[in-house]
Amino acid sequence: MAAFVVRRLSSMALVLFTVSVLVFAVFNVIPNGDPAVRMAGQAPSDFEIQAIRQEWGFDEPVWVQYATMMRKLATGDVVSYFTQANVVDEIVRGAPHTFSLAIGAALIWFAVGVVLGLVSAVRAGRASDRLITVLAVIGVSVPGFWVGALANHYLGFRLGIFPNGGYVPLTENPLRWAYHLVLPWLTLALLLTGVYARVLRTHLLDTLSASHVQAARAKGITGRQVLLRHVLRNSLIPVVTLWGLDFGVVVGGGAILIEAVFDLEGVGQYAAQAIGDLDVPPVLAVTLFGAFFIVVVNALVDIAYAWLDPRVRPR
Image 1 (cartoon, rainbow, N blue to C red):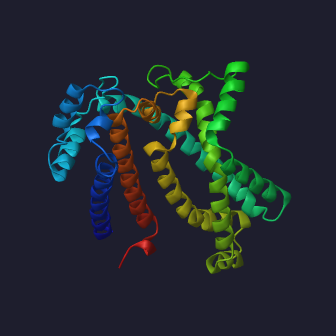
Image 2: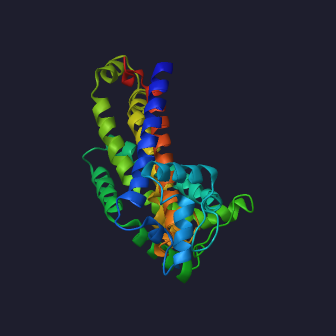
Image 3: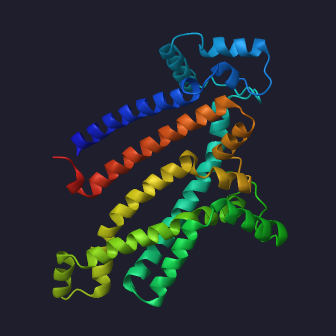
């Protein structure tokens, strides 16, 4: 296991370096024109462009520009040229909002997805199974921002059942924190609950026909015990892996539209505002940090998967 962890962490470091190079290339090398002009935003003066060029080393060789970018991001020396605020400080300020949204929604879509997948597998081919399948397809097909906008308008603005957007810190009032996040949680969870139900259903049906399950039944173990102890536990391994990957994607930027619809002031909404303002430094920092987070979570998920199932460890 230790050797596998070392190899996986080594490959993670290589992927992180590759991601940083790709992000640098996308923002500074691939587009035509002077990167200082793009970074300066709308209607910059010649003095501002020259200051940015010197600050980021755009008049230096490419490898020097890359080293300068990584140093500034690592030390937090990145300033928005639209608001003059420190970008890293803004990301740190919005991170609790984004994590609150992602963690709550992830727990909901996992729990509900497991229950629906279990019911669908047990009642395979029946009306309830077909109904869950239809709901899963609808959940995947409907745009999340559209569902969120409708829920926010009718349940928040028109009826007043839930707050019309906004965020309350957990440390300030836990009940109001959860109350403000109910609609965002349900909206984001709706997008993935059906996927988890269908994935778990498939694995449950495959495991039910396995030889060790048939042997357990032959020993006189009840169907409920077989389902929960022998079938569900094995079938949950790929679902847990998928959950970790999706959670990383959501935190890394997958919830931008949901944050914007409900005005949660998280990292995603901060990036969306920067894109609208043509403010390059925040978009660059959020993109790189989000990509790094996804890569790290993927590595941790692989390690957890190998710990749960030794068969996947390389010999």
